[in-house]
Length: 505
Image 1 (cartoon, rainbow, N blue to C red):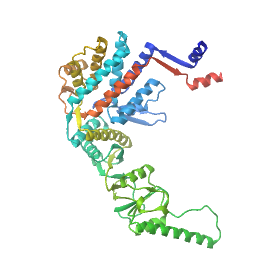
Image 2: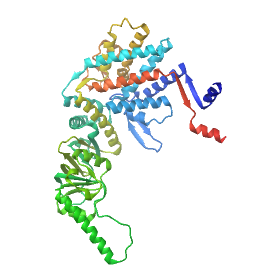
Image 3: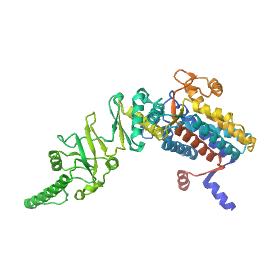
Image 4: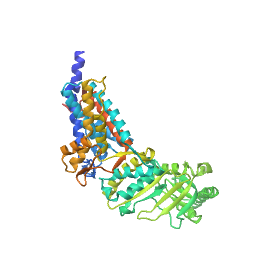
């Protein structure tokens, strides 16, 4: 046993007890500090430069944490927490990480005063239940569209797309009324962002394969995976008669395929690969709208939108596999086609942007906005933002009568949880250049105030965010913070580079 322990010590770095707890708290606090300055409408941007020299300027917390390349296991876990929050609630990533860092910092203080981690965990869980109950009680029910606009406005505010927030919030709410976020496509084209618009249905950035094809077609839609053309053979033939025979066979084959397309009344064709030039001319003469070189991802979306199957062999064309819908070509800087199926459950937002950098930032902002708008359409309950909901949760928890069955250490953890919630309005005030102490005192006295970062004042704010996002961010912060608090030891294996270096020596 002694030899095994000695061998384990040689190959691993082991951190135990209080040292492990401090390491976790320090890392969580550093991660929170990394994104803290980006919170709110007056949050600062960060420039991210990857190993290849690619630059991204953003204040999106999820993007920043995703870009952190680290071998630190704790930092990696926290980055995963941010990723999970983004996937589940689309927004609230920065809030989640800041609250988690504050909870762990306050837990470290309690541990230093002799409170056991298990007592802190129990106090935090009690605090979470009380906070969520208070948030639900403070929530406001709105019409789904109105709630979607309010939530999208908050998500976009503070990002580079803020100048066009009215137009974009409306588009996001309308898109969320039509489809799920996974079925809402965001497309950027060069142009003025004021010209952003919503297309009901799926959009594919392609123009017809030849001029003279119709610009609108309604009816059966064929989705082809393989090339629409005659079979090709890699052979060398010098006999003109045999060459003529092959050409005749190819022509006959294509005539049969074209006849099958005509018999099935196909009006639109989307081909993942190319289309034979002779076939393209025949399709034009027959008034069939056709597109080639379609991305695989777009083909899958088209299959869902039109309820058609992707066919791999042109000889297998039949009515059972065909989709149905309306395809319409739109003139733009980059021409595109919109497709609406019989039951439209897809939408596309066309977002003009002046530069490639701004297009990427608009894309990130709209992804969050569409997501939170969809949450509000599904559950049209919103809470007041700008730090108000955190102050309301704090106030409700402070007024709670302590349970007789809860000991003083658990109660201390519950109160520490309540205090930790105020880190959000404090951070907003800090980013606006306001006095943090003054903000904390006044919001404790009046929890209906919010931080107006533009006027640098505390006042009632008509800024809203989905209850679902607040609930998800707080739950995620507590559950993952608790998991880290339960960590007694950290065993870090020796990096493989060091192992190889030792072997070479």
